[in-house]
Each structure stands twice: as C-alpha cells, then as structure tokens.
Amino acid sequence: MAVPVFVGTFSKNFNVFLLIPIVVPEHVSGVKSFSSSNVNHIFLLSSANIRPFTQRNWYLCIMNVLVVTATKEELSIALDNHLVSGVGMVSTAIAVTNALKSKHYDLVINVGLAGSFNRALELGDVVEVNEDYLSELGAQDGNRFLTPEEMNLEIKNRVQMPKRTQLKSVRGITVNTVHGDELSIMKIVHRLNPQVESMEGAACMLACYEANVPCVQIRSISNFVEKRNKSKWDMTKAITNLNKELQKYISTL
Image (cartoon, rainbow, N blue to C red; front, top):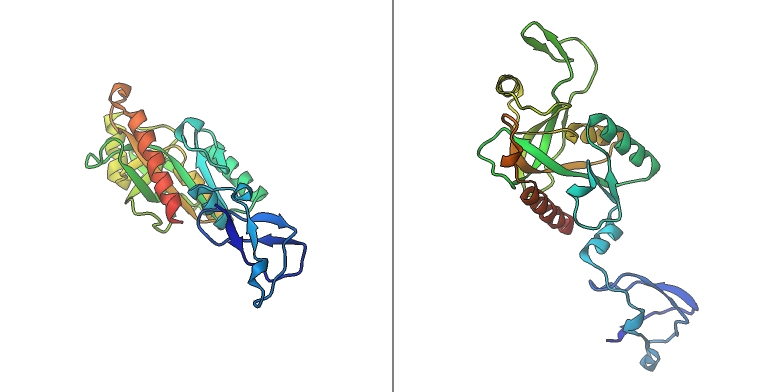
C-alpha cells in the first residue's frame, strides 16, 4: 500500500522519517514541494521503497545494546550486537572490557545458564541476578575464609545492579570451579547464602560497573547445585526459556 509523505521543503534530497510503527527511515530523493493551498502535489512513496522492520530492529534504533553470552549455543535468536565472551571470569572480563572500549553501548545484557542452590526454583526458570559475588576471591585461614575486606585489600568482589526486568531477583556467586561436593556446597551456603551460581556473571557486571555502563544479568536454571550428575540437567529447556525471556525483555525497552 502506498503511504503519503507530507514534506514541506524545497530540498531535492531529504531524509524522510515515517513515524509509524511498521517502517524504518529510508532515504528519499526527488521530493516534490507543495503548499497548504495546493494539496494535489502530495508525493506518494511506494510500498516497494519501504523496508519493514522487526521489533528488534526498532529497538536497536533506540538503544545500542550488547548481549553477552559465554558460548554461542546459549543464544538462539539473531542479534546484531552479540559478544561471545568465552567461559570463565577472566575471558569474560577481558572481552567485555575490550568491547566497551571499542564502542559505546547504552546497556549490556549478560545472559546464560546457572546452577541453582534454591530448590524452590525449577529447571527452566529464568531469573535476574541483581547481586553477584566473586566468591572465591580471598584467603583460607585454617577453616576460616577471609574476604578481601578482612585482609584490608581494596578489591571489589561484590557488585549490585538495579532491577531492570519483571523476573524474580536472586543473589548469585561467580566461580572458577562449579560446586559439586556436599561439604563445599554447605560452606558456601553458610557463608553467602547464594541462590544461583555461574562462571561469568560477576565478571561481566564488574566490567560494566567500571565502564559506567548499565548491565542486567539474566540466567536460566539448567541444573541444581549438587553432586554432579548431568543426566538430571535440562539444558534444552533452560536455553529455550532463556531466549524467550530475553526477547520479552528487549521488547520492553
């Protein structure tokens, strides 16, 4: 269907912005001028020159967003700004820091899988991690764990971000070695009482914090934190639900 474009200009080359929710701006040449007393000179832009856009494209016109995953398999939807950071804290911190230095982003969304300490959560549940710890950063003093603060070290091992989604808020820990031993699980629950764990979350959030870029961490529960038994995991359901919730969140921005 042809769309009438009303342009009050004498320029032959003018960027016409069609402010309707089904098209994106297109460059139009040879625009005809008209006055309010001569409406017969309305220029019709053929629908052949209009490029439909998806909700994602419209969103990317408004904000410059970087989506970060540890692996490419965790993201099943196509996004223009997708960074695969690699697994673990070090690779994630380096990759995100470099990305934020090379280009301006208004928001970083860190998405991925997580193990849950909380049995009230179900496999496939998607949550927002608002508070995350580098739980292994410290020292052992016999049976006691010393935090950086207790050792008078100016090291940030905890990060908080404002809630940005409608998802359930949880406290997370980021680890180099995921828990799979009853004693170590008992100790970390007693010390920090986390609800979920990942291998990248706090590193991404801290990199964004240092760059003064907002960050939201979205995790889908793939397994419970217990003695390792991959037959009990549900990666497929977790990834499917993760991508559904990511799309929902993007549509609200």
